Length: 247
Image (cartoon, rainbow, N blue to C red):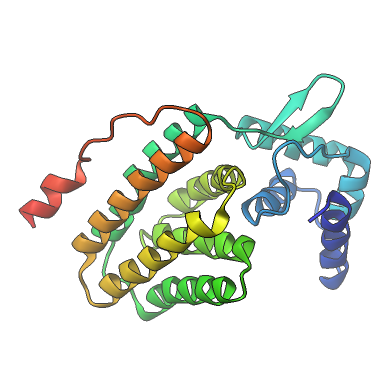
């Protein structure tokens, strides 16, 4: 999607709510972050302040606060003579994000209280969304569904703080995915893994689901680091293995 299309969509959404967004930098940052999470704003895209503020419905000062927040989150970067642009990550960023993900996501599966029907339904809905997108050959849609799946995994922990942290990771993850030249080859195996993990959660086998997710995150890190021209780090067993064994 082009920047013009993104700005038009944001303006349409605002008009559809029949209200101008309040002068909240946090809300403006959330709107922009979600555009990155959903793959609508890609690495290197320059963000024109005046048009963006008008599309979102905030003042330029409020927008600048939001942009500064996203720069601090490493989602945007300020470049000389270009202004604010969507960041271009490197292999070190991939390793760091996946290090954090392997601490958060399997733990959400393993240590959360027994998921209720609505929580499990969110996992299944994300899997179904990805399966439908794959059947249409819409791999950007598969990538979005994958984001929704991992958001639902972390939501199992029932922690607003973890949910907020995951939103930052999701934005960086989507920028990583754009690096993959063959999105079908990359996403298809993980779509199947998401379905298997959901099956395990539904059956009450959360330790097995957590181990499966940990293994798959390690595999994804290796693929992405290689795609970024880096050397994958040696990834050993996490804290998860002895915990699962003890159970």
